[in-house]
Image 1: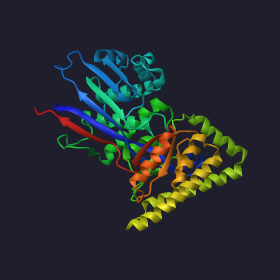
Image 2: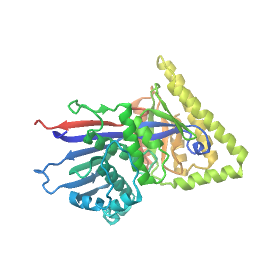
Image 3: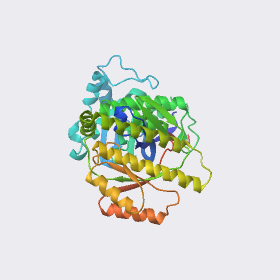
Length: 395
């Protein structure tokens, strides 16, 4: 691996197609990878290019640039006599390891607007040192995903970091001379996913594991009562994702649904049962074969109705918001169907884009939404999971 100049990794975001909130109460949720990516590039250093040895991370989208001398990182970890660098031995970040990392991450170095990024940097340091040890490198991170919008930005970050660092370590058994983005074998995705989950735990405390699993494996998953089922989707889906730019308190929204369920147990049980049926039917449609544009249009019509039903039930749960309603009203004027995704209370809204919808009409919808201050993304759903690529020196 000595002739590698750069390793790149990319991992997709995720969205909840159906079942948010209801999944906490035993219903099925359907999640999919999103064709918007976080990309991580690791440029290796040599004694000639960096004689003193440094580890640098450049978070381009939030304008954060941090550098640590390798000797300082080694000194921080020195109290951990039993700390072992092993890419194939996934471990959790213990309180002792976290103390070592905390001595390297000074929150005062982060702009106030992105103070939460410090936990992401802590996750990076844990993953990097645990997998490759105390080696000099420059790590550059960029992303298509807006932060904190419910599109799995932190999971995509952890998956991309895990994938690229594992690739650098040689643990993924890949052909470094093959050009372009390389897909990973199932066992390699599994190890990437396990490390990424440990990074997510540093950022979120007690994550469900759905976000990192979707990002690592791609495609779609059904999630119910703690069990994940991978879905090989066949049906092509395009979405317009609208970011309302309204922040939301996920814990408060989840608690609010639970409180409503305790006040109206029979009514809310019926709501959750209906969401479960919608998720299961949506999964069946997505996996169903299609022969031509006519059959695609018929399937799209069913998906539109299910999305509309799910949105109505989410409003029954009390997690809508004026900004979400504004997006729904705008897209409905163009006879398009939308629903919130994730926690609600702001965040993002999905709009299904039929296959035969013209690019001109899509642009018109985007302009209308953006004129109201929203941010729009076009993306495919259910694509490839984490991938890596190599750039080697000629020597």
